[in-house]
Structures are given as C-alpha cells and as structure tokens.
Amino acid sequence: MEELEPLKYHPAVSSAFAFRWDMPPSNLTSLTPATFILAGIPGMERLHIWISVPFCSMYLAALLGNGLVLFVIRTERSLHQPMYLLLSMLAVADLMLSTTTVPKMLALFWFSAREISFGACLTQMFFLHFSFSAESVILLAMALDRFVAICYPLRYAAVLLPSAVAKAGLVALLRSFCIIFPCIFLLRRLPFCGRRLIPHTYCEHMGIARLACADISANVLYGLAVPFAAVALDLALIAVSYAFILLALFRLPSRAARHKAFSTCGAHLCVISLFYIPAFFTVLTHRFGQEIPRHVHILLANLYVLFPPLLNPVVYAVRTQQIQQKVVKVFFCPRSRSLQE
Image 1 (cartoon, rainbow, N blue to C red):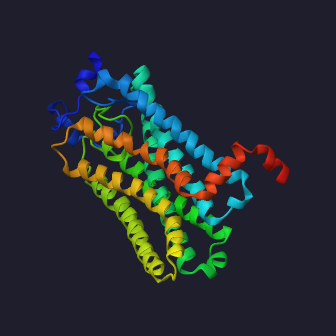
Image 2 (cartoon, rainbow, N blue to C red; image 1 turned 135 degrees about the horizontal axis):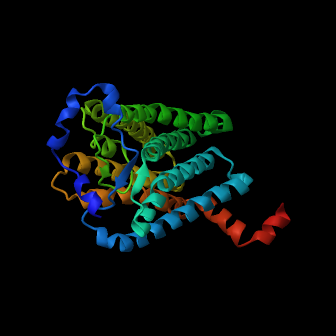
Image 3 (cartoon, one colour; image 1 turned 90 degrees about the horizontal axis):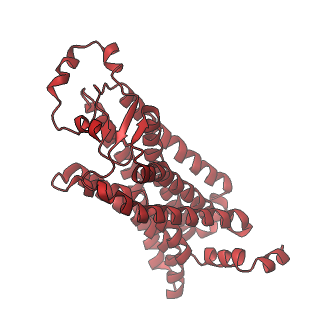
C-alpha cells in the first residue's frame, strides 16, 4: 500500500512533471505505463469483500438467465422468429457487457489484483463501450420489429426475414466498432508521465484519459459527442416507433386486441427503461454531479453493468408467455418434448 500513495489522483498536475510540455513527441509517448492500477471503490476499501458478495451473485444470476434465454431460443425451432433472434442478440450483448468488467472487479475485491496491463485496459475499455453501443442498436431493431408487427401485420413475414435480422446484427457490430475503435488511438497518443492509478474498478475511456499529462480536449469531445449522439439517435427513433405503435393500438377495434398487442411491447419497454435510464443518469451525475461523492459514482457505474444483464432475462421470462412455456417444456417436460420430436 505504501507504493500506491504517490499515485493518488490529483486535480492539478504535479510540478514534478513540469518538464513534459517541452519534450518531443517521441519522448512523451515513451511515458506510457506498462500497467495501470485499479483503485476499486475509493473510501470503501474495507468493504470490498462485502460488496463483492451481491456483485458476484448478480453476475452469476445474469450468466444463468441470459444463458437460459440463449439455450431455449437455440433449441426451440418455434422461437426462430425475428423477435426472439433479436432477443438472443440482446442476451449476447448483456453477457459481453458484464463479463468485460465483473471478473476483473471481483479479482480486485478478493485478491487485491489491482494491476492491469495497458493493452488489457484498452481492450476492456473497448468492449465495455462496444457492447453498450451494440445493445442500443439491438433495442432499436427490436422497436422496429414491434412497429412492423403492430402497424403492418400483413407485411411482417415479408419484411422481417431472417436475412433482415442478420443485417441488423451486422449493423450493430459495424457501427459500434466504427464509433469505439477511434478511442483506442485517442488514448494511445497520450503521455501519462508515470501516473497510472485509475480511481475505478474497471477501465473506461475518460477514466484513462484523465491520467494523461497532455491536452485531452479531443478525448472529451469525441468521447461525449459521438457515442452520445449515436445513442440519442437510437432513442429518438425508438420514441418515434412507439408513437406510431400507440396510435395503431388506439385504432384497434376491441379492447382485448389492444391489450394483447400492448402486452407484446411491455417487455421491450421495460428493457428500454432498464438500459437507458441508468445510463443517462450515470452520465449526467458523472458530468454535472460534482457534489456527489466519488464512491457513489463508482457504485452506480458498477450497478449499471450488472442490472440490465440481470433483469432483462427476468423481464422477458415474466412478460413473454412463449418463453415461459418453452422453459417449462425444455426443463420440466423433456420426455414429452422428445416424443413430439
């Protein structure tokens, strides 16, 4: 612990590195550390073991729930439909989001494994933001799926072919890659002057950039404007889709038909809320909530990578009758299932 003391995060740059601005770029880039040190949750180090218990439980439940969703959709041919194929993509994105961060976080809490190599830190940062962006695209595709199913039911089978779902997944991958990959180069160009203590449990773009002893305006502008604009566009298109869906629901002749149609959207609306509300709350408190203690920021960020992966399978299992029936069929009536096949 003594060697970590000089690496505390200071709001002002130490005068010991005043020479750095006159150094040539070749010498500045050599100041990139081989490893970073993750501080965990500053001020709550003594509680790391206790905090790890619910975090580990939520992570294991998320693995089980999303794995169950993927298994059921994979094994049941009747679920090989656009809505459920998109749900399987969402489950993969959730698993990526939590698995990118939680194992290293638990190693930090349990074994004080604070060090992470520079390359591993950039890799964790990339997949963290990549999975977030991909999940946003998948939620938009699911909203468009519900829009076509309710507003144009006769065209649903012709419009949403398996190839269309595959294209939606490809768009999610390509757009997320193109948005997040430049962050790696924005970070690799920065000198760090020996500063390597990250006051967090995992690596994220601005958390790394703030350690640099150079101008990070490009990181701030790109890291805030580009991903935020992409996700905001997704959210706006989702809102437009559901505006048309609500108009179509009110035009349905019977109350039972409206209730049935709305129930198919209920699970998706819950998942959208679980994804976007904590995300925007975390971003806003991080940018404008300077009076909020740092450990609260970090706890919120940790819960964000755990709550959506944990609750999304629960929401769909509770709200979607087809998944409930298939889970019962697969796990509780395997004999009758094999006889039918």
